[in-house]
Image (cartoon, rainbow, N blue to C red; front, top):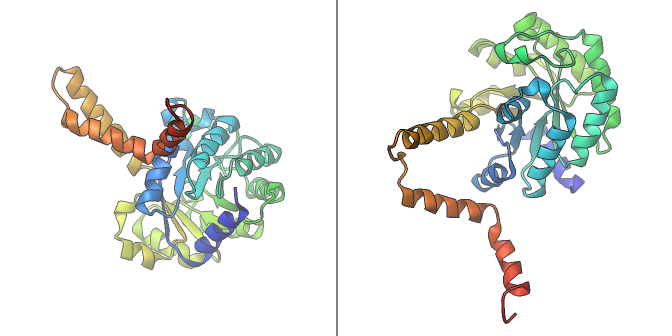
Amino acid sequence: MDNLARAAFRRRVENEGPLMIPHCPDALTARLCEELGFDGGYLGGGGLGLSLAVSEALLTTTELAQTAAAIRRRSALPLVVDGGVGFGDAVHVTRMVWDLESAGVHAIELEDQVAPKRASHHRHVEHLVPVEVMLGKIRAAVAARRDPDLLLIARTGAVQNESFDAAVERCEAYLGAGADVVMLLPENAEQRAAAPLRLSGPVALLTSFDLHTPGEWAELGYSLVIDPVTGQTAAFSALRDAYREQRSGRPSARPAAESFAVFGQMQDLAGFEDLYAIERVTTEPGT
């Protein structure tokens, strides 16, 4: 990818927040987000683990990097990728950064849970590593990147496992080790408002966009607001409802003509017309 694109994204994160980053599991969704004018897309480990029905804990570096590369291949949308715990210790983090940077991502998130990651993370059972262990991973990630504009986001689960104050302390230490952005997980509106005020660097948040209006998000002071939930749950709910109706012998709520129309729109969004144009020139009779 063009390193200028990463530099431009970094400048926006540092100067323009909040950038609104929705769930983005594939290239088609990335192209939709790009068309709608979102600031970027989020390839979350939780979302990818659900799609593959294996949990985030059982993802591999290869699966994550290949998915990221497929998105970036067909979209210029800035991509933030959840690297989880880095798939191991500091040397495994190094490999992850190599692979994700080569895939063309703009930012990598790294969190301070134990490695290998545990599936029970999804039911809010987490085990944090000591601060020193996470600092080593962050330093390894900083050293591994070739493009200094590749953003490194250090995430802590300390709010839920220790305290809000402890989470702030961890985030400050992570910034000192070279993280470009930090992320904690506030438990209430008071903590959500306090986090950007308490921290000395850019702050990202995992949440639902629907918690606040755009104006309210702007006032809170976050650099990145990431919604990993709304898109995936909305898509799954619509799919489940339609299939239930059809399996019960009833038509889905969407008329067949509308479904075929949307199918055509999806082909347009995917950029198929460019492929059709090549075939018209190279393979159709008389050309």
